[in-house]
Length: 127
Image 1 (cartoon, rainbow, N blue to C red):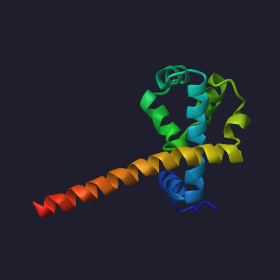
Image 2 (image 1 turned 30 degrees about the vertical axis):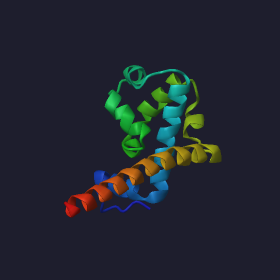
Image 3 (image 1 turned 90 degrees about the vertical axis):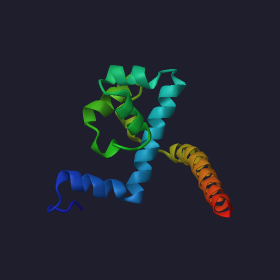
């Protein structure tokens, strides 16, 4: 339940930090990205039609900024992707599985670079 003492930006920050909602935002963003790419539409093209910047669309597709996106933008995205708003917002099990596979690839890359950096620091100490 919303805490009446929180300002809207603070509420959005707290809401976004909830892991349950964070996963939903990321999966919704991944769904937008998947639909867009399957139609052969670039981020620039979709952003221009929707009336937002390409960088903002990129943030939405990564799950950042979804908690504060206007309903007008969501409607425009759904329209451009040729699906209903309910289809866009409905996250099914397969959407979560696709999103989790996508995230797993990124986590593997992050872990690889973390280990490489750790090894680099160890080698640097030896010199």
